[in-house]
Length: 141
Image 1: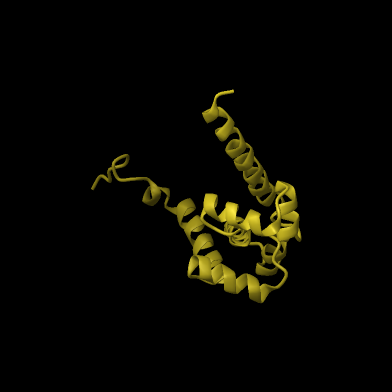
Image 2: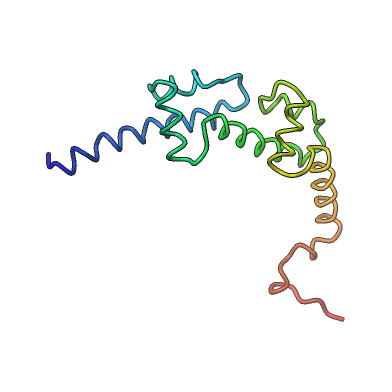
């Protein structure tokens, strides 16, 4: 092997393990997982794993897990599911922590977000042309 190839192989292997841990979070976000579970998935010590994950994704593993949970919650809130059901189905352990974190990420409470999304869905059903870009639809007077 050439020197450049031998230098890149360890990097590739390292990145593959970090991506494996990210995919673990993406798949198991609703479960009670912590840093130990995630770093074990990548076969790294916790502190080395945090540094590498943050360097690659710009967030700590915990921040990324919270982000994934909030994004999944946004999807569930587009239905008429209860806030409590959404909270627990995406892996949060208390409604108050879910509400606080959701608001930090979206600048709205889960209830406000849900109201807005349900109203939007209703408007899309009753007035679908409002949601088609103007370049595709021209109103005739």
